[in-house]
Image (cartoon, rainbow, N blue to C red; front, top):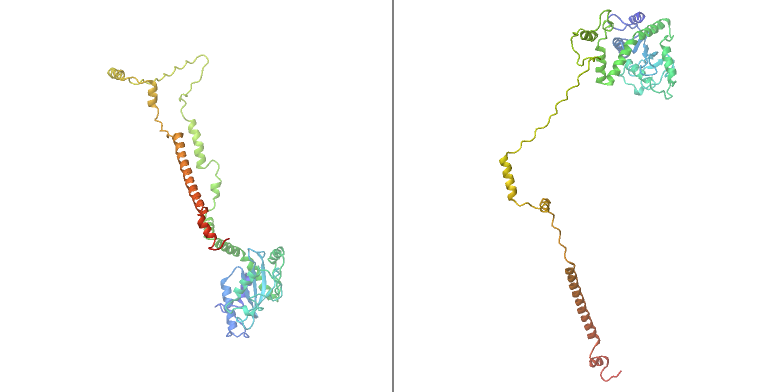
Length: 377
């Protein structure tokens, strides 16, 4: 950390302005923009991104990014270079990786939509920090054969991420190596805070219920060791109450006579007396005058025979439908038959008359019809 602060103090004055040698025009729009971005990225103090301009070249930066915690690059520390054109920010910078990651080649300008290979997609409003954030996201995407891209297996990438934490890459002059080592150490120191930020983001993505549960868990005080371990001779209140209860039972007086006395062999217990049987009281009989009146009434009224009483008690039967006798039905059928025969005879007589009328002509009329006057057949 001290080496990193010393390297940064070489480029920044006490008032926050970036020091430039005489060959850089401070009125240039690109130089002003780079100075502004240097100040912003130093103030933000992002635990996953570090970037620093080289002392003798403001258009070349050295950056360090951390692999995403929820990917195969988890915990990796990756170094690289940023080469800015003179027309920056109107043209995109170039990115060169120095640490093997299994996703990008080292020492080659990688092809991204935010790099110099695609100036048509670059926006002047983008900054170096936003480009580095996009670079972390691009590491988790497939290479698809792009320039400077690799597609190593997941296990190989995890191994490279673990190896990247051990030593930083060796590149450039001795002063630059010192800057790289200082930035690498700074990333290791910021690792706990990076993990905390990642956990907070996961809780925020999970929803308000998960965030509330996490806050309650953090606010809950831990159990004190004094409450867990009681000193000798001292017990919790619940245990003391449980022990005092049987002691109180033992201290009760012994004069209490048991419900069942103990049996002795020389004394024969007396047989228990039978319990009195409760007989229900007979209903009160009516008075004698009332009985006499009832007997007189019964004698005066004739006694109905049992069959008649049974008939009276039996429910009234429903009247059965009366069927017509067969004789009446047969006479009706015969009458209808006679009428039908009579009508048939009448119709036959009429037909016979018509036939007779048609075939019985007068002989004179038939002769006149078949013969012409003066002509014999």
